[in-house]
Length: 297
Ligand code: GDP
Ligand code: K
Ligand code: MG
Image (cartoon, rainbow, N blue to C red; front, top):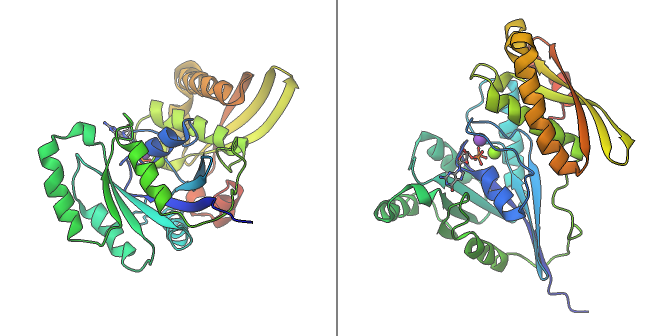
């Protein structure tokens, strides 16, 4: 029997905040990777499955490649590099407005050792004048041999369909790995914890984000239209716990309210969300804890 179905895995890499998660969410059409304006929002690799009649692309939104500062950072970089050697193609995304920077060069250096086709995706073209695009393309063309260079706006959707068509042409023949209604391979539990973490990033100051983890302790279906979720936000310091709880619990309330909305949309039911804050010193440097919190590849 002839099999013309095409499929493959593609990694999205790029320094923090270039728009990797926004792109994937746009493509998959549903919010599965959390987004924020803070770097290192995405820690685990998240797969988004884009399915068409004749093709399937599984996108892997990798944690931003950057120089590690502590063991969690080290873990993130390792995950990203392992991923790169296993995929069918790499989408290296840059921010058109930010242009070329040290962080991009760091990634370009790493790409030298990886024998995979690389597409350069110039994102956020909605933020620049068209005249500024050409010099940027020229600059990158001289730095690496790209399969294609494609300008897009992940936020507005410009040129995204064109990019997808192009990527489809580069897919090898292969099976449909996931059923068409499956958009991610991550358990709901993980997505829920990420949605909560996203609200923490959104609502708290800069000292908080890099040092928290969210653990879902319990999910219970109370009945057909209500789910009870118990989650703990883990912080490193007592002072952070204070910030997270806020005056009379106001901060935790706001985090919970926003997170609940998103979780209800995800699950399609009413949600009762119970949030706690716990201090666990130095959790980022303790390997065993990393495993508990799901940071294993
Ligand atoms: P990541 O760290 O690479 O995953 O970046 P995110 O997807 O979290 O996006 C970082 C920020 O850039 C968010 O505030 C996005 O709304 C914004 N962003 C992403 N793509 C675009 C785009 O095409 N145009 C504009 N103007 N903003 C974008
Ligand atoms: K981000
Ligand atoms: Mg991201």
